Length: 124
Image 1 (cartoon, rainbow, N blue to C red):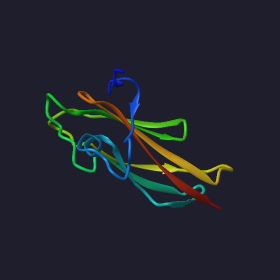
Image 2 (cartoon, rainbow, N blue to C red):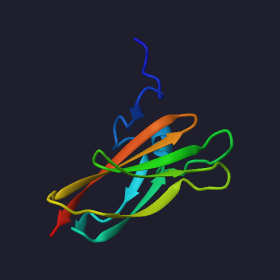
Image 3 (tube, helix red, strand yellow):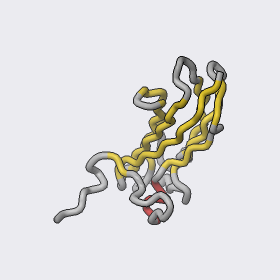
Image 4 (tube, helix red, strand yellow):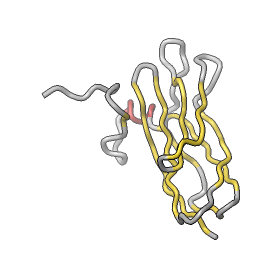
C-alpha cells in the first residue's frame, strides 16, 4: 500500500506526544489564554514549529491561516528571507458559544499544509 503524500490534504502529527522532527518543524504552535471573556479582545500568538521553521528561498512557510472553528478570521502571507513564520493577532469571541476552537493552518512550500488547534472557554 502506498503512503499518503504530504500534499494530499492537511497534515497533523500522528502522535502529538511523540512528534517527528518534520512534525515539530511544521505544526503550528498556538499561544493564548485558555479562557476569554465574551466581547473582550484577546491576543493569539502563532509560530510555525516547536523547532523554528527556516525561511529560505528554497524552503519556507508561504502563509498562515487563522480560523475560529470553521469561520475564517485572517491570512498572513509570508516572504522567504525577509519574514519570520510567526504572527500575533487580536481576536474577539462573543455570542452564545461557551467554547471556541482556534485553528491554524500553515503551508510550507516543500512539506504541504499543517494544522493545529486549541480549545478555549468563553465566559460571560
